[in-house]
Length: 173
Image (tube, rainbow, N blue to C red; front, side):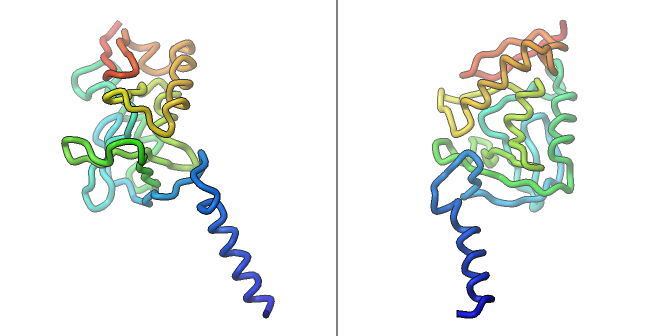
């Protein structure tokens, strides 16, 4: 066998090894690359082609209605700005589409799970709709007390009413 064929086989093994090993925390199999077209609010964006994506397992304050809504939207735009390439990851344990026809996905940008990062920054909270806990539930929950204790984002700017099985509600202090 030529050295070129051997190198090609080795490269193939290296690329396929993570998939063969099963889903690890860094495994994005079943994921789709996309380009962000625009940000709707703190937990929803649109990718090229017009598909709306709702960041799954989190909730951000409602635009135009709640304290920190505009800042939460800006934070999502910082993490995944229009024109940037992201990876959309479905969770096999959760619904793939919501009742409004939006894709329900974890968004990965720049090597980060944007859903978790928004919670870390206090721009969103975990929301386990119908009590369903997905792949990153523990990471989302772990990020919450840290953001709250540090008074990051909405935790420092607003009065926050939150529980993991419901949407966040915020009001000015």
